[in-house]
Image (cartoon, rainbow, N blue to C red):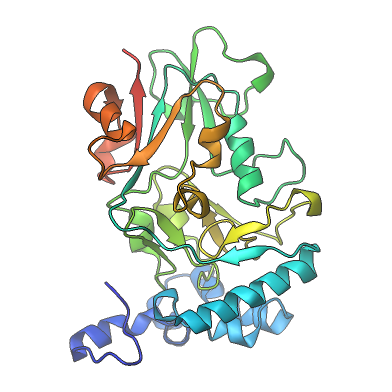
Length: 324
């Protein structure tokens, strides 16, 4: 549902249902609507950031993404560029890349070919300006590569801390797990301020300027696909990717949740996600579900396809398949 704009008159019932979508209304009703001190603290965090100087008044009062005019968005993008230069010493080019019509993105991963090298996770970190202490620090990576015993699909017994220098190991197979861009996404339903939503091309995004850091979306995600910035992101100056987008890989502030966006700043411009480009075995397939001749559709029609945690009913856009 689109949010109400200043020049659009909507029925009273719809207007009333949209009242909780502003930060001010949410903060005002926090004590009555949230249970537990953790929820209250999370809701008040934007005000605490303002007091600490980590957030400007303009940012606090910024309208929801769907209510922003092109002029307002342009002003916000330029302000974010200046902030990045002041904090990290790099002037980025931040854009707001919109979804294309007739596109419904989906991803498929060949479990027969994946060797667990984790090159996809490292490429994701570099492309998306994720916080890390070093080149081997993958704690904030959107991609977790799990090592499992062949014949088992029990993720509870999987190992994500194996040695990538000795892969593939005999008797093991590897399963990268990331955001599944679910059609029935529990994360978007859990957000109390609608800071995360699904775009027309299927990508679930987060507005980092609107997120209050309550982490309800993280609790709701069955794939452990979201990450929380407990502190100011640590991105080495020389490692910053200056080609950034508002809803994807711009450097996130402290106290917000982030996630995989299928590299929308790339894919909406006709490129592949960074993780796919570096895969040495060709295990990753990405494309347009709405194109009947696409490679992703061929995979879904002709391969043995496996949907992770299908029983939870999320109807994901991320699939696993086997060569035979």
